[in-house]
Length: 230
Image (cartoon, rainbow, N blue to C red; front, side, top):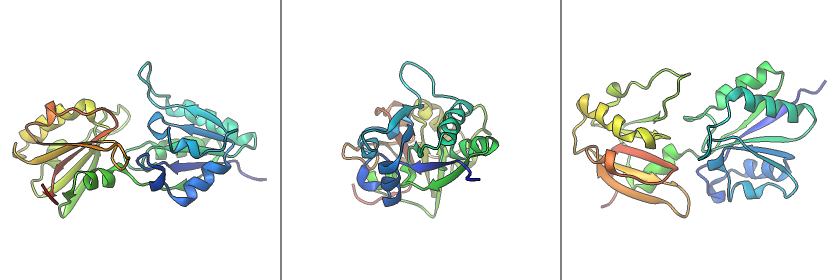
């Protein structure tokens, strides 16, 4: 008996040129693509014209779908014999919920085949021309009630580079906690919008200025490290 399978695919930062060849091939052959809204646009356009497209990410007029509801949708389509791609922004396992969705699918008797993607954790420092320190930490800025809280105080290391994904709404509070833990206020920082895309924007600042440095989503913060050029 064939086990129904869902392809869990990393969409990368949003530029189709940064998509893996395997991801592009899976999109072209999919019957159903279930995508987070940041994953849409040019990458989703690589799916064949007749594929069903379902958006489950957070939208301006409502919350994101819960993991269990997404798993129900994916399992239903996969059991019907359809080729299903679950398209996740960046990499499915870097500050994302790929592991939770995989576990939920396994509980429903559905397997996952994983295709990694380029994460904004590497695309954002590159866009900001930051030379990463000897230690690089990637953290989620979202307040996830189902996950352990991020120990921001332990991440206040002047010799390290900290990349904060999906934390735009919390960037001021994060900066305050890092400063309270001893990270100097003049530590270089940058906000990066749409890292890796043609419309990438970078706003350079310091830890003290991070709270008032605003860019539209998707945006990541890069704190610390050295500048590759002015």
